[in-house]
Image (tube, rainbow, N blue to C red; front, side, top):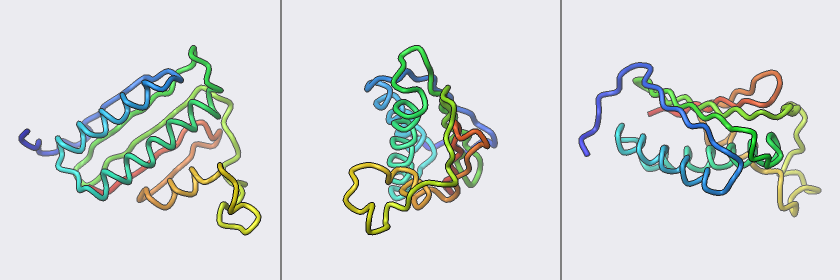
Length: 140
């Protein structure tokens, strides 16, 4: 497929339900965007990891796996970056007081690493004040 020249502000949107098939829909969108815009393998891998984690968090913690609630994903492709926004219909959470997964008392916990991983792999990570929307920036 011939790579497109990036037009500023090209927007892609998905509305997903809290079910396993939603992950595949998101992965397909990430793959299509990566192919279309010639995204590097490292950036592709980071996007895939972060967005899977953000979607699972939104479905599980935000929407409490309620099939009537949606997770909205937007990807805005700009000339030098992609900005992904993941919004759930939950009440949000306090993202400023998360336990440190690298602290000795948390090392053996099976959960609690998602936001930590996202913050390390995305070039920028911004939460809205409610905590039910995350914006992830990746340089391309």
